[in-house]
Amino acid sequence: SPLRAFENELGVQEPVGFWDPLGFTSDGDVSSFKRRRTVELKHGRISMLATMGYITPELTGKFPGYISNSLALKFDDIPSGLAAISKVPALGWAQVVAYCGFCELSAGSEDWKSGTPGDYGFKVLTSSDPAEKEKKLAAEIANGRLAMVAIIGMFFQDGLTGSAW
Image 1 (cartoon, helix red, strand yellow):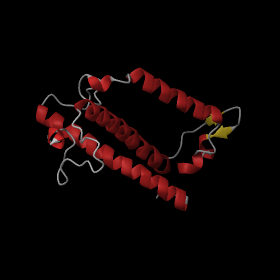
Image 2 (cartoon, helix red, strand yellow):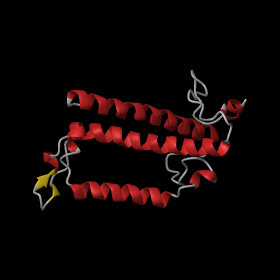
Image 3 (cartoon, helix red, strand yellow):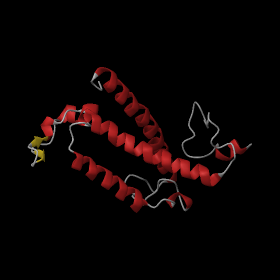
C-alpha cells in the first residue's frame, strides 16, 4: 500500500499513527509528500509565532512610541487581535507583504527536493544525538499542528466575541 511508504516518517505519532483522511498520499509519491511536509512545517512555524504574537501584547504590554509618526498613531492605539487589521496603516501592511514576499523568494521554492523538509541550516535547537534530534523535530511538528489549530480557534473566538481569550 502506498500509505505504508510513509508510516515511518517523522511526524507519525501515537495514538493516531499515520493519518491522511483526505488521501493526499494515496499515490505514494515521495516528492509530493516532502513538499507537503515542508508546507506543514512552514505553516506550523508561522502559527507558533502568530499564537505568541496574539497573546504577548496582552501579557507584556505594547511597544512604546509611534507606529506611524505622520499619522500620530502610537502602538498603544492599535487594538489586539482582529480589530488591529483595520487600524494598521496601509503602508504598514505593505511592509508586511513585502517582507513575506522577500522570505518566500529567498527561501527557494524547491528546497524540499534536496534534503530534509523544513531544514534551512539553522542548527541551534537541534542535537548531534540522532535520537534527541528526532525527538525535537517530532515535537516541532506536533507543536506546529497544535499552533495551527490554536490560532484558528483564537481567530474564531475573537471574531465572535471580540476577544481571543
